[in-house]
Image (cartoon, rainbow over all chains, first blue to last red; front, side, top):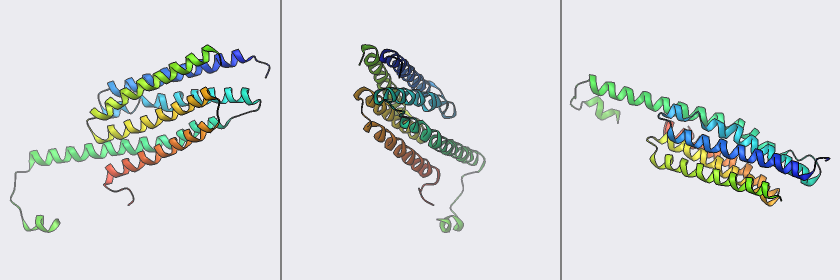
Length: 125
Length: 92
């Protein structure tokens, strides 16, 4: 509590600016990259550093304002660190699965001759 | 609140808005379904960060709970949509 408010506000302002720039870079990478598997990488910047910067800024600011240790904003990046890998891995599996299915369809369409409908097709639904 | 901090808050909010516009362009254009789901997940993140920065600006603790709720809803909705486009149903 010995630091004056100006220094705390300066640090908080710097963290917020860094977070904004990181989120912007992540969004630019997400829009400009070519493939879905490439596009999955830049948002990691926003998910980790972007949210940590904002949370540390909020924790510092509230700790100074209330005169006690206010660490609850740090809970948010921790929650993100638990949940984001789950959705990311699920989406990567979705993309792999659908790409594999599309490739299988294409190879079947190019190798197998068009055929007439058989009884097995009618009963397989 | 000093002008430095309020300027930084305005800059961060403008960055989030610009990033959200870019992500929405990917959401509209996205060639496949998984691009759109990922773009929605990023939009949840941007909304959460905006709420946290507004909490700093208004010096209020209540924004923290809103941000936590947005994070959890974002996880649930993204996982449900990923499961849906993987299998065609959410709960097997």
